[in-house]
Image 1 (cartoon, rainbow, N blue to C red):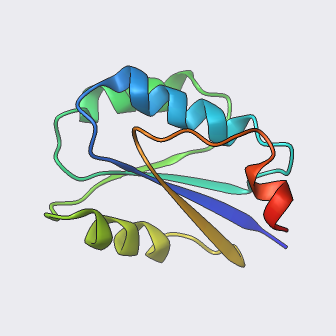
Image 2: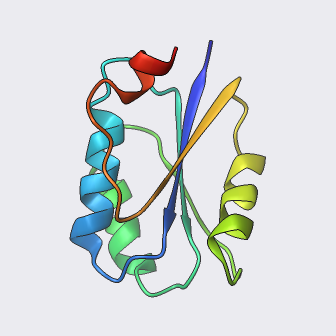
Image 3: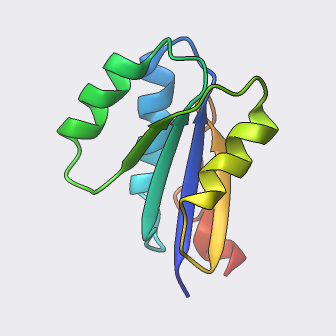
Length: 102
């Protein structure tokens, strides 16, 4: 069963988004796909650098949407996994969040 994580970056602080991404990468149950949606274009350069530094394949997309729901829906379109989990760019998952739900 494949799991995808969609991170919607509405945050103004790259450190928050990096913490959210790290919590996805450190899951005890493996995440197969990671998609970051930047919806306000404030962090696009910082996010590009963050993705480049990560040893995982991460899809980074900018979309000109006005709310988090539309951004999540756009992110889901890029996923091929059976399950899709969402988190905001200023959220953080416990290490076993996905494992507990599978």
